[in-house]
Length: 396
Ligand SMILES: NC(=O)C1=CN([C@@H]2O[C@H](COP(=O)(O)OP(=O)(O)OC[C@H]3O[C@@H](n4cnc5c(N)ncnc54)[C@H](O)[C@@H]3O)[C@@H](O)[C@H]2O)C=CC1
Ligand SMILES: O=C(O)CCC(=O)C(=O)O
Image 1 (tube, protein in one colour):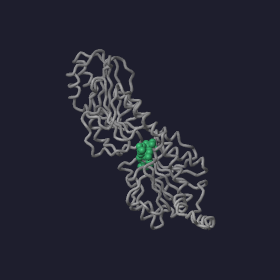
Image 2 (tube, helix red, strand yellow):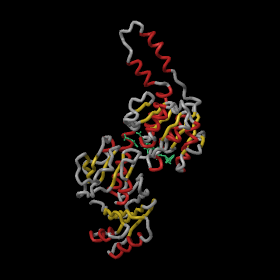
Image 3 (cartoon, protein in one colour):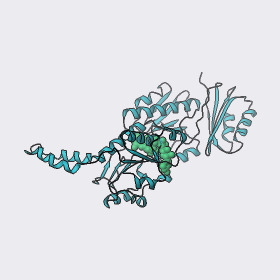
Image 4 (cartoon, helix red, strand yellow):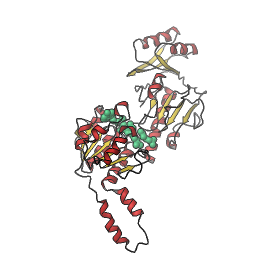
């Protein structure tokens, strides 16, 4: 609960100062030791085993993926999970380009070769000229890149690859209309994951980790890939079956694996290039994401408005009066009827109201013409299907 005018925000990861500054100190307490927080700010910390306090009203993920957050369990509690769509997409795109170049030009092994040179070698020039033959690579232009997942990151990767002279094929059965509009017209539509794996020399994965995308790349479809193909995974560890992928590398069914998720199965494999989850680690991306989610969180805590929550509809309403009630409820018949009847019985006049739904979740903002007493809030919370009720009077 907010104690008077102030909100407590528990911060689980390093969050950029630019974002934290959007939660002004006079009104917000932020830090790693906040007890009974109103909200939690997080990046990659795994929250699945965490006991999320009853005081929590919102989770804000300063990034894209929310697989580290128990979204379904939070939805049942009427708690929105905000993220920052696109806030780090350019940073990931640039690292994917670096990954493609590192693999195509054998840069990590070339670098290891140079690091192993002996400065006292009297024939250093000759050693270098002899050694470099082992690292000859290929140019990206005119090769085919397959992009699986054409959201914020995938679209930027496709666009950059076209600008590098590559041919691009893309697969995304869930693509949104906005994402489809933002794709360059040169991107050829692939029929399936298999179509991409079979026909692209370089494949880059940009899907969220969901039940449907776990082991999207597995033993069965890895064998469709060209023996010299490069697979890039900047999505999530579980999207590729790493055991099958290592077997494909060892069996020469795959040329190289580039990923952002090292684990014991792939560490030190000579044809794996692994980075320590660096995709979003740029000053720009860290600031963008932190600022986006801090602003979204503040508008939710203070006004109940919802923007960019992965489990709630977008709902925003300008303040029509000083007394607002925000209600998260199951998307079932007669909720609005019961909410307005409860308010009418308490003598409250509804000034303005908005209700939207998304899947099983509905969200309602109601501005009323007079103060709302605690028993009315209790009665609203007791309506079957109501998941959370917040009273948000404008402080004097
Ligand atoms: N390495 C890193 O630091 C980062 C990793 N990521 C990962 O990349 C993922 C994608 O990020 P964004 O592009 O920002 O998300 P996004 O939500 O904009 O795009 C995801 C796309 O995947 C598509 N998709 C879903 N299921 C699919 C399937 N079965 N086959 C093909 N496409 C499918 C969706 O329709 C959507 O267009 C995130 O969920 C996260 O896991 C994102 C940012 C940083
Ligand atoms: O916050 C980070 O560094 C990780 C970013 C990420 O994986 C994401 O946004 O999905």
